[in-house]
Length: 447
Ligand SMILES: Cc1cc2nc3c(=O)[nH]c(=O)nc-3n(C[C@H](O)[C@H](O)[C@H](O)COP(=O)(O)OP(=O)(O)OC[C@H]3O[C@@H](n4cnc5c(N)ncnc54)[C@H](O)[C@@H]3O)c2cc1C
Image (cartoon, rainbow, N blue to C red; front, side):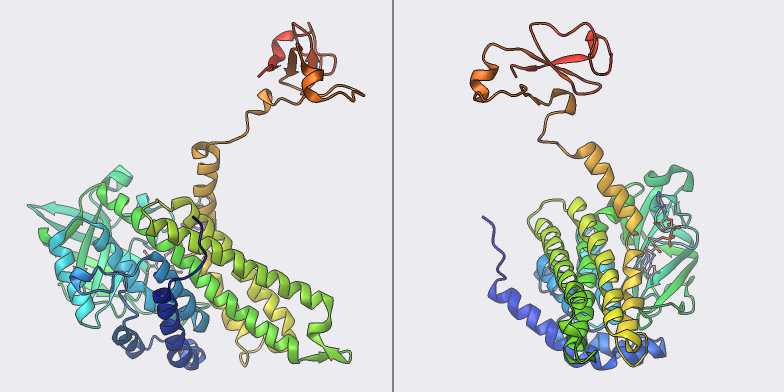
């Protein structure tokens, strides 16, 4: 059963997010980008509309929206402003480790608060000296009885400046890599927690990004989300669940770049005709459309797998690096179609290009996604085809007979080095093509 139709409920959710994006985000996007500031009231408005914390289970007061609904919402918000969409989606990242954990007390406390009040939670693995190499973190968690004491710094943390709560990953021993990593829910107002100044960025400037420092922060036993080793697994499971959303960020922004480029091509005149009449422009638009569609399909497949209990690790990685890189190409081509105006601040193209560039970096760089997919293709993937040395490439020079008649009673041997096929009861003493000995031959027929 394969079905590309959204349910009426999903269409409603998509429309709700689209309405919010067009009415509330789009008019503010350029202003807050220029201001380099996050409008917190907007996040509160999104909370009141039900667009934050959608994934929280109903038993804690949430909407229990699945990964497909999540990417539908993300695409719409990102189409209006990627910076605002990143901050609007950050609660989903911060609370996912709590949803995935088995700590009922933490779910009950924090998920309930997050659905009842416009509070914010951020997610902190990265540090000043590491991002991709999560197992190489240095922020220390020292056990004291059943509690832990945190010391260290997290960096690049989205919404750190506004967060009431933080899902923090730290290690009991930096030498033990994965095995030392734990996870905690930390409250912003606990003693020893301080947040750094907002980090100035190239794009997504309306999204708050800052460092967090922990100085002898006492984390009570009940706020331990995952013990040593389990924390790393929890971080990876979180990324797998949330990574399709990064692809959805790309789809939304790329869709807007494409739509603006189409609009411009329909109106701008050059050499006595509309840009849309030039084949070079049409081909750019066709490729933009193809990439938006392909990206969306990949994102939805990853989300569908997550929704159906299939580990979407590979499809989420593919969706992330394909969609984010495609979006950057689309934004660049859209700017090209808009010519000089595309390069100005009076049009949306330059902001889209700046904003989209970040998508290839956060939540696992493009290189890290390639490492994941290459690892699967080389080690995990089960091929359908036989190995090359067993490939039954059989032919007979100039024969017009049917294959079955031709091969009846014959034995075929293939040279594993050069591929030469020898017919006979035994292999030749030496390959007439590459001169390797008979041991280079493998029987390939009858199979
Ligand atoms: C605006 C913004 C918001 C962010 N928000 C958050 C957040 O909310 N929470 C959080 O925890 N983090 C956050 N991050 C951090 C982000 O996830 C990291 O920046 C990212 O994972 C890359 O890590 P890094 O910057 O340390 O680069 P590095 O890991 O130092 O990598 C540098 C370069 O080397 C490449 N590289 C690294 N290892 C390999 C390898 N094995 N093979 C090939 N190439 C490799 C990388 O792909 C990259 O190109 C945010 C970052 C930014 C910029």
